[in-house]
Image 1 (tube, rainbow, N blue to C red):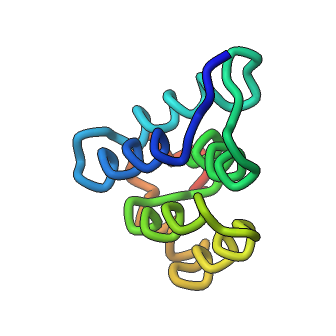
Image 2 (cartoon, rainbow, N blue to C red):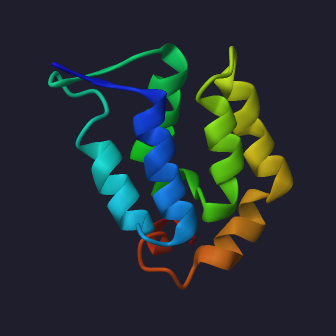
Image 3 (cartoon, helix red, strand yellow):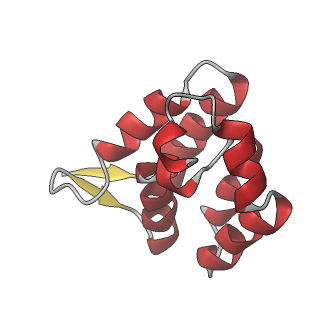
Length: 109
């Protein structure tokens, strides 16, 4: 069983932020690892961030959310940080920003 570390996810988030990975790439990486017997997260915070990335199109996560996601990797209560994501950019605004992006379209109606 492979351990998914905060450093693994940090590097994926950095690649996404820099544009060397697309949203679809990040999602596919997380989907292949979240709640799969072959992988084990090193902490609850890592598991929570991995879960967010596994559902990033549903959750309307954007590159601008990367700093909060990185912070959540070591947070005692990562959910508190996830809640801030939607304060900084409300869901309605996210839907408007992402509606023309094929990866998010189904969730921007």
